[in-house]
Amino acid sequence: MKFNRHSVLFKINIVFILTFAVLLFFYLFANKIIDRMETFRFIRKTIFLAKKNKLTDGKFFGINLIKNKQKIDKILKNGKFLLKRNPPRFNYHLTLLIFNGNKYIYLKSESGKTAFLFKRTSGISGRQKILLAAWLSLNIILVLLYISIFRSIRPLGKLRKKIEEFKNGNINVNLNDYMLRKDEIGFVAKEFKEAIDGVKKTMNTRVWFIRNIAHELKTPITKGKIALELLKNEDENKKRIFSDIFNRLEMLINELFAAEKIAAGNEILNITACNSIDIINRAKELLFLKNSGGINVITDDKDYTVKADCELLIISVKNLLDNAIKFGTDKKVTVNIEKGVLSVINEGAKPSISEDAMFEPFLKDLNVKNKDGFGLGLYITKQIIEKHGLKIIYAYSGGKNIFKIDLNKIQI
Image (cartoon, rainbow, N blue to C red):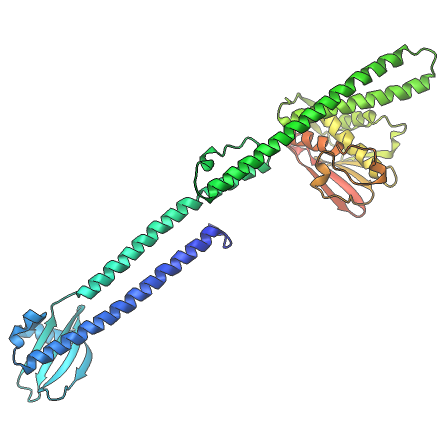
């Protein structure tokens, strides 16, 4: 499992681990000090009782006299000696030792005739009990606090996934569970929901605007085409020019309608089998070029048949070809199909806008060649390509603009 050392949770974990470590250190340190104090009191009581010749009363002071000789020998043989002293004005040699976690004091007279072994029977002192209780309480509080903080920030991961869904095009993400919270996450969720509502309003306004404009344009175009048919004495060449203009305007409006339906998720693809070369040839026809010789198609002699909405795919390729011709320095375009990847290539300067911006509607490169455009071609193309579950990738290399579409996903 990979940890993100920059995440808030990772930093909180580090803080709590360090806090537990510091508490453990201070507990062990304080417990050691208290144990030394208790040991000193044990020694002082033993000396006091020995001077008063009241060693048999030691049990009342938490001191137990051991009388079993075998046990005494075992303790003296296997115990660890901690301290040896000859207190002033004291008739005994004092030795402090530890055996099986218990501390003992061995008193031996200066003459060596008498000896006593005492055990501290008080066990854990009251101070040690208080210290242990305080340490355990602090640890329990820290654990509860950590659980509370973890539960508070845990929804951040799920909220991030909701934001990713929104970024990927789902504008109907459900944030109700987060908006009920009273903490910062609830506040962020509310602000995010308001931002989503704002985006929805903007998108609805844009769709309404585009559809109404397109509807208003369709009427004069239809009337113009009818009026053109009624003209009898006009030059056929002029009539053809006007007919091409009306056809192109009508095609643009239809493209715009299709793109908006796709963006709104209302367009149902009419999936059929179509050949990639046929798609390119049909796209060339829709450009109404006087001479299509400037478009060079290169393939690796494989039959690239795909399952797609052929009409929409033709529109997307047509827009790429139109864009390449418009911005090409020599008006020539290369269409290359290799290993299932369709590439539209033209020589020219790199666009002044970013890769993400060039696919947005009504955003275009401020170029003399594009001063009369609406900036919709690449936007429509992207909507169509993504509706098919594909991606369009832009690259600039060696003075050439390259748009790539990997068709392998829909290839038959």
